[in-house]
Amino acid sequence: MSLDEQFKQVSDSVRNWKTKPSDDENLALYSLFKQANFGDVNISEPSGLVEKAKFKAWTNRKGMSPDEAKKQYIEIAQKLQAKYA
Image (cartoon, rainbow, N blue to C red; front, side, top):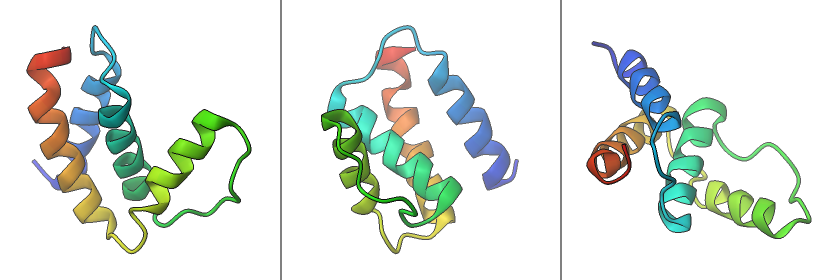
């Protein structure tokens, strides 16, 4: 299975978890997902508290290659799978 196929499969399974990860875990997954799919942040900083936290988490991934983001996303999601699925 290719990295892209594995990433898609894992990200689809994360959406179907029975419970939501902690805020820190969720931000890690979110920022890696965004970096994998869109690269470096390409929007201006939002004003809402939650949106700012997501923006900051994604900004911290600046310069990370999409493939590296996919690998880290898969690794984290697989570790959390038993806890939240």
